[in-house]
Structures are given as structure tokens and as C-alpha cells.
Length: 421
Image (cartoon, rainbow, N blue to C red; front, side, top):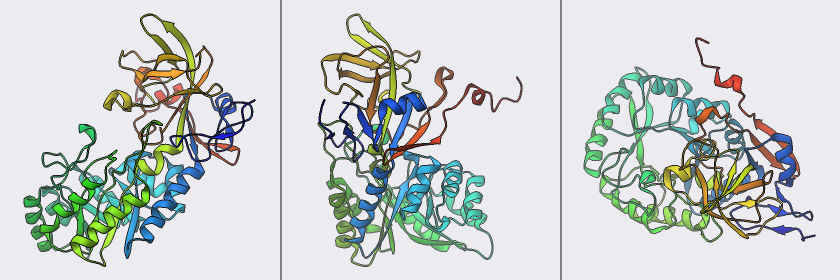
């Protein structure tokens, strides 16, 4: 029997291969989890998220005079995840009325919620104002007069202006947001006018500036350049630097350390704007991606020019490989190691429904349980019902105990919004 061993960093902290040769997440045998909860299933190591939240908070506490760490909740909009991060003292950013409702339901203090969005509706703004959110991030000049009107007499609302600094990191075009030609934010020149307009508004209080140059960034230097780029806009109490820290999706990649990421951003603000500024950061992927794995069951193994290993999920539970060409790795949970070069494919009616191209699995067979790590960010968030497939459950694992926090959808759920049947 193999010895108990710690796995590569792409798996949740504390993951092991147990003495029976089976992957354990949060102390739970993944074969047993698959039997109990079915597949596909998202399995989250609760301690992993808590550890990463604490690492961010401690890194900022050791470097910044004043700071706030917010969960970029679009990464994993699940009530149990919100609740866990609220318990760890993290704030929250939301990008829609639905995310705001989830954040409030998960226990976040409204005063530490930031509302984003490039196309906020009046209803979403009114919802945020009624909830008492701490800050609203203005994304375009059209919002200013509308927001001022909606705040109404006798009130003032703290706002930030989102600036597009003209800096981009190395990432996929679909998740790059710092370039001038972007759907998000205002150019440096347009931001000057927006600052004046907010200053003249009767019900808005400009707390500072916001920027975000993109997601899944593995180089730190662009974060500093982005701070330097907004220097001409003046001095403010608050600088919200967005998120963007990338993660390792495969064992051959390495992400920057949280301490180095935080040092880069905090030092840039201090060097450019001086001491005493409040630095706000919005990690999402870096908080939750590596905390979660997805379990699948192999349904067929087909050999033609290639070997195609088909599982019971796919683009309905992990859309990132199809949207961005995102690369994952996979293993048979009770036979770690390679031997068979194959394509791990989903069940959906699309030739592009391939989860991992050129996966290396150990003699894959029908009935095997297969794991793909690093699915905590944007797996559940982008899950869908393509081909009428019910969305998977979310299972929290800790100290050998597992609990269901989101149930699997049923076929009845597919009819839930029908007015006529």
C-alpha cells in the first residue's frame, strides 16, 4: 500500500493519498464522497479557503497602515462560501443585484460591501442603497447623475471611480480589463471629468479610485505600473486596486506568493501617493480556486485516432476550458499517475466539450472516479443547464466530515420557472 502523502499545490491544502491509495480532500475519501453525493460534484476543503483568507489579511496587516480585503464574489457565489469568508473578517464585492442578495444572505456587513458593474440598473442601485452598502463603484459618467438622483435628499453615498489605467497583464483577452479599449472603467482623461462631476454632486462623496487590470495574472510588475498610471489624477484617501492574482492550475505552473503580491501593491501606493492611504484589494480566484476539486465518473472510453474518456459532466460544470482554452489536469482518484494519453471529455453535444486535452490518466476505465483540481473559481459560478443537465452539488469537507451545502438540481428544478406546463 502507498504511504500517506501530501499532493502538489494545485490540490487543496492538506490533500493526501491515503494508505488505500485514494485521494482524500479535507480528510474525506473521494470514492466515498462520490458514492454518497454522486457525480459530478464540487468538493471544497473548508480549511483551505480559511487559510488563504487569513494569509491575505495577515499579509496586508503586516504591510499596510489601513486596508480592507474583499472577496470578489463572482468567483464562487455560494452562500456557504460567503458565510465562511464573512466569518474570517473578509469584506465583499458584488457585481449584480443577485450577488448582493447572496452576500447579504451569507452574512456580510453591508458597510463592507462594494457594488460594481458597468451596466447597473436603477433597481440594482436602489437595492444597494436600501441595503446600506458601503461603497458604489462608478464605472461610467452616465451613472453619476443617475446615482446622485437615486440617493435622494438627506443622504450621501460613498463612491469610487473606476479608472482604466492603460496597463494590462499577461492573461487571456476575455479577462483582461486594464487596457484603454475596455468595457470597464474610465480613461485617465475621462476620469478627470468624472472626479469634477462627483465633487459637484449633492449626494455623492468621492472616497477614492478603483482600478483592476485583469484576472489570472502571474507577473507582479503590471500591478505597480497600474498604480503609477493613475498618479496624475490626484491624492485620495482610498485606493481600491481590484484583484487579479493568478493561481497555478497545473503542477508545472507557479503563482506569485500572496505576501509578494500584497507587497507589490501596498508599496506601490505608498511610493506613489505617500503613507496613510487605505489600500483595498479584491481577490477572488486566489481565495477559492485551489480549495475545490470536481469529481466525475467515467461513462465511456473510446479509441479511434485518439483515446476519448467521457465523464458525466463537462461544460455545464466547468465552462472555462471552452471559453478561454483554460488548462487543467486530471487523475483517477484511486490510481494516481499516468500511462494513458487521452482527452477527458464531457457529455454535452459539442465537439468543443473537452475538459482536459492530452490528459495523462492511469488506465482509465468505465466507472472510474476522476478528479480535476482548481475548480473553485468560476466552476459553480458559470454552471449551466446545457442539454438539460442539472447543476452539481457543493460539498464542504473538513476533518474527515462532509456536508452538503448546495444540493444537486433535480429535473423538477428545470421546470421551476415555467409559467405554463
